[in-house]
Image (tube, rainbow, N blue to C red; front, side):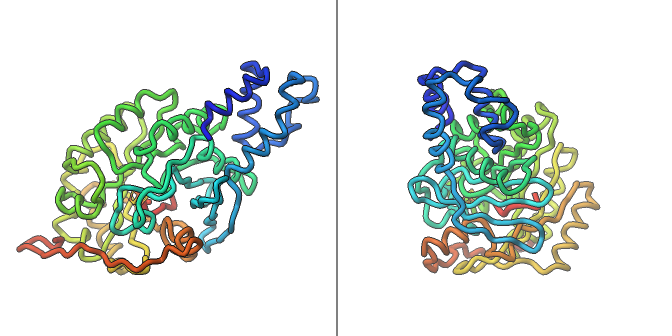
Length: 359
Ligand code: SF4
């Protein structure tokens, strides 16, 4: 379901803009039916009151909790069942954050991600995206929403933009607290500028090398990492929110001195923050998480090059690791597949996702 379809149903039942605004606010903020409006029967037209119970039930049915998985870091992973029985994951993050999914599955097929293993199952409607926020708000306050769960938001742009517009208005989430995470393409940065609400941007870069990026993220747009950063930074400067550059650290793949040198050069002077996210184990994949000492040394090396670097861990990694693993377990999708990347180091070339998610 999409938000404009919800609005159409309200209008067909006689809702005026003021009624729409109140109902969208109540839904997206998970406020009770009676909150703040005195007597609803005196506020809403009779025809609208007649359809409201069924509409509320339909909205509640868009996203229901299948299971809860508290982590030791204050986060909590939620397995969420959609109305058609499909499942996605959302993560309650410490300090009022929420990571939401935008697709069931994902077509980008990142080699280090469980969600990408089985391709795209379907898009989430904009109302299903907001429903994850409404659901989370029944559990705890949500002040920040990151679009870093299952799916690539730029592949479902109309729905994600519609959800962002609602969350950034009736949903009372600050615009810079809406974080659109993407592998990037030429179209997405322009579209983000056009919305009534312009979110902050997280760019999943993962390597400075185009060829390696095309192996790691096989279905991302084939763009030079340097160009991607330029496009993302132009958007970031327009909005006034720095780019969050996401870098999943894979031992022996993208943690070499060459990458650190190149990253230092690419990010020098950029309006950006680098989030280093050590890889979470994924059953059936060969990738390894760098050791803590090596990771700390990398972070320090970048920091000394003047790059604002944050070392992050995937939220709730103690409860079944990265994005997509809860769903995979629930749906019995654990089919072993070995990573296909075999990198041959060249001379001098070692390589061959708030709390954060590991997108
Ligand atoms: S990391 Fe993100 S973009 Fe890549 S496959 Fe997983 S969900 Fe898709």
